[in-house]
Amino acid sequence: MNFIETLRWRVMLQDYTPALPEALDRGMVTGYTGFDPTAPSLTIGNYVQIMLLKHFQLHGHKPIVLMGGATGRIGDPSGKDKERELKTEEELDRNLAFQQSQFLKYLDFEQGPNAAIFVNNYDFYKELNVLDFLRKVGKHLTVNYMLSKESVQKRLETGISFTEFSYQLLQGYDYYCLLKKFGCTLQMGGSDQWGNITAGTEYIRRTTDGVEVHALTSPLLTKADGKKFGKSESGNIWLDPKMTSPYKFYQFWINADDQDLPRFLRTFSLKDMETILHLESLISSDPRTVKKELAEELTRRIHSDGDFEAAMQVSDLLFNPKVDADFLNRLTDNQYSDISEEIPSYFLSGKNLNGLPVIDLLSGATTICQSKSMARQAILNQAISINKVKVNGLDEVLFSDQPIRGKWLLLENGRKNKYLVVIRD
Image (spheres, rainbow, N blue to C red):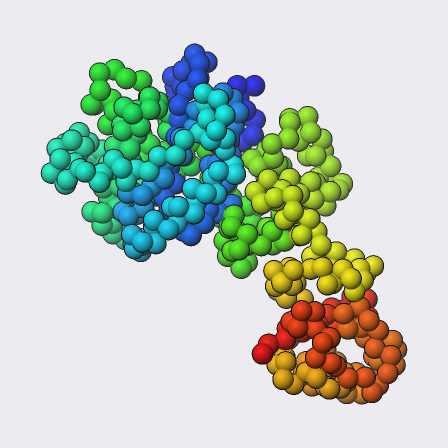
């Protein structure tokens, strides 16, 4: 399949300009997608557009990642029902540098004539004063044309600043600059960007002599429950492992609604069509296997093989009854932090630890047992373990060297009830 056919099969195609398929058939096309650095990291929501660029490159075309060093200072009104809060220049520069480092993992910036390139649109504007911009750009798109855009129409009642209203002018000029410097003739984005993208094609039509440029958008991805894709109950799913751990990232896919799996497979998997169709055939009978396949593929690709293995270790601790004390000692502090958010956790001062009776730990310092009598009974029933070591006597006490690295105690009351005690100074 060619690029357009691939996107259509993967349900990643919304709109495109009529002449685009012929242009793609004629040879390598240079195309771009813009990313404004208004967040400290890329999210899984951004990854939809990254996959668009990935397939574009895999089909032999040249992708440009346009970082919005300038447009990020303005704020895109698309998809927003109120004015964005402007970020500081220092924050935007920091975000841009970090996001750029993330992109290096997802596209090929080194090999062949279609190697991806980075461009910062701040370079287009840093030497351009406001009068030059108004003469060069503002003169060519009428207010009537700009008002007709859906992103503006939705904000007319609630209000839109001139700053955000002018965003489509900057995005249009971005396209013009990329055309002139790199021969870029395709702009891609989410369907909410169609108005901004076509503002660029219109500006180029009016300011160049018959140059043919194109537009393509993908549908916005929503979940089966109608909610915006890319968020969990605790917020955004970030591509930075420090903001969303590999374990939580893995669990996001494991916890996906079965109804979302066909769309997720086609949008995010790089497996071939035959394999994806086979996985889709398993959804009704064995959705867990499908989720594991998808979660593993994406965790390995977006993070690393090592991060996937670390996520599996956390899963083992939570769900595999056969792990031992040595296994606990091998887990990292980051993995314990993940565990602390998955099971009931308690905080205990290290000053109160040494010599603390286990009974008091179970029913006083924590609420693992509702009373001392229940704690005694659990110990007598051989149900209590601390760091995978059984508590055998009612008179046992804790020692200061018992917590793993002085920080963690895993308590178990029976096979299924796990608790984490976090030791603080």
